[in-house]
Image (cartoon, rainbow, N blue to C red; front, side, top):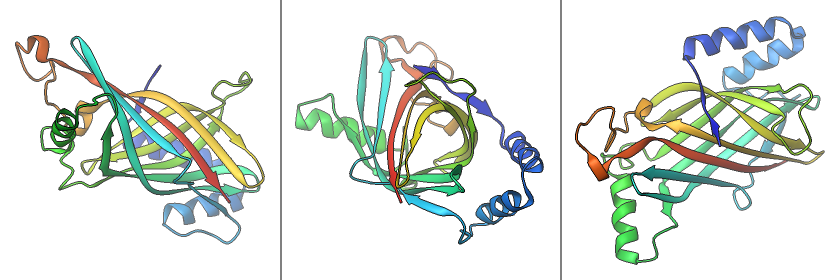
Amino acid sequence: MKKIKWIPLFLLTVFVMASCGGRSDKMAEIMERLDAGEIPEEVDVYPVDLINSLVTWEGTKVGGAHDGTIGIGHGEIYVFEDNLLAGNVVMNMTDLVVLDIDNPESNARLVGHLKSDDFFSVDTYPEAQFEIVRFVSIPEAREGEPNYTVFGNLTIKDITHGISFDALLEQEEDRITAFADFDLDRTRWDVRFGSGRFFDNLGDNLIHDHFNLKLDIVARK
């Protein structure tokens, strides 16, 4: 399980601009146009396969854990001359599911709590988005292990933080697969319920700040 690397937004912007400085003028132009929301004709778009892609989560507390999935609304990965450029994945928080509780009433109660203002305020913020701004290959990565570091901006509850994590990406002519396994600190997105950082004397009610996300993404041209 890999800890997340946190990057302040302004540093991430500087990083991307500096990286573009060493690229060809064409590559820099394409990145600027993508950043502006335009998709140049030269860029190949790989939409996320919603049926075969999956986002799973796990949260832990004193003496236990819960896990489930988050629905994917849409997403795409952008490629130029076989180079991974950028992309985005939009998650439907309304489709948050708990998998480890079989009792329907208990399951619905936890789902409702996670969707409430104690956690993700889903009525107000029905979507979360991960905007990928850069893929950086990992030199001499071993087969089957992460071979790229992914840099991007994660927005939850309308709060955005720059993050990076390692991922295993495999690219074919008409398909891209990506898998990543990393932890997030929920309190950075103002999800504080049961956090020992903000509340005292929680005892057995303490919920750990870090929760795990696994991204298992398939995108097809």
